[in-house]
Length: 470
Image (cartoon, rainbow, N blue to C red; front, side, top):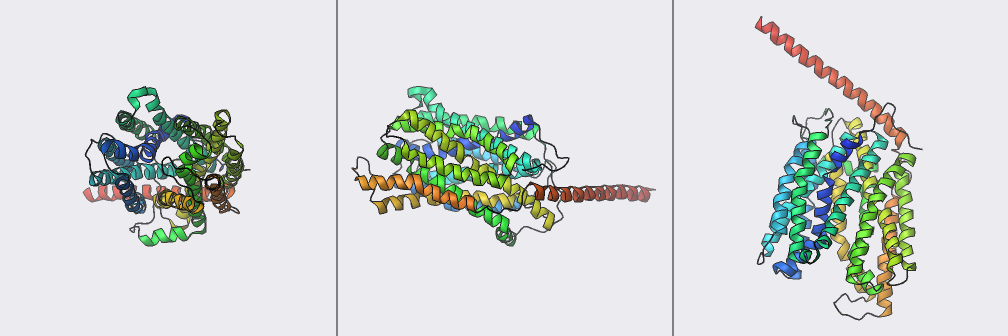
């Protein structure tokens, strides 16, 4: 059983909710970028599918280099208002401006316009995501409380994704086409400053003493990757992203062509899938406090295999069974990101104890980059496999039973195999609650001594200045 560090305190729920609030617009923007924005530029703005696909691919490749640079910069920030708070404040207006320019784009905007503003949007979203993750690690220092905090962050993000999905439905016919994308854009633009104010005004920030005054280099980045614990988490994060990512790329093909659901029904199933992550995030955060994060991650991968396999047992076009089936998969898969993020925070404490260096931002940059790599290669891998099994994705194409069966196998069982690799990476994990409690105890003692030394230096400096004036 996982135990908290002695004398540790849980963060008050209002503080956690205020801190987590920024996850709402971040998740909403991420969903619009993935689902609605490509189609908006292809159908409403007038760009070809090839141009839209090329623009997103170019931007994703460039974006891969952003997070390590941002992580290194964040770790060296030490302003009066905090280390990560200033970055959150910086990222908000960047995202708001880019969201306006993209979601309110007018017909005739070309590919350079899309690439330029996508780069700005990805920059802003990377700043917000990375600064919130790193700030969360310094905010919640207790092993169990981290599971709770990252679970709530995940749950708030699910709320944002569900709200943005429901917005076009709430608008009815007015939500179709460009007007729906405009409404989503305004929702995100308004939500960002509101949630940002809640976060930065209510949430405290604890800037840990940093004994390292040298610039962070790429060598530091490589040394962190080589750490056994971090190498495990990077490997796990990649495969845990590839698994569900594969289903995302094949989702419409599977449920429409293989299982016989209408376009509207696939949209409804997607809402239930995402909404189930709200309960899932809370549950997995709770379970991690009982049995430990790495054990919970292993349990979730086994549960994913069961729920994902069960989709093949549901008869075609049976919404009454497909809804709970998709909810169960969404419930389980919500565990992956939050548990890995909480485990990275524990590694960050171990790194600071051993080296005296604050590397929270850089550590989170490793796993956020992994997520981006996974999302960038998922479509290519999935579509290549479909081509091998003979599936034709063209509109109106008639596929053979063998091709449909190949599609079903790709959608249901390939993600299970990938997720098993991710869960297997943390078997034998040593940085559990007991070990982390020892690390935190040593860090707290060292930080207290550093604070006392700093106070003595200040007092000595004041006394010396007073003597000189005399």
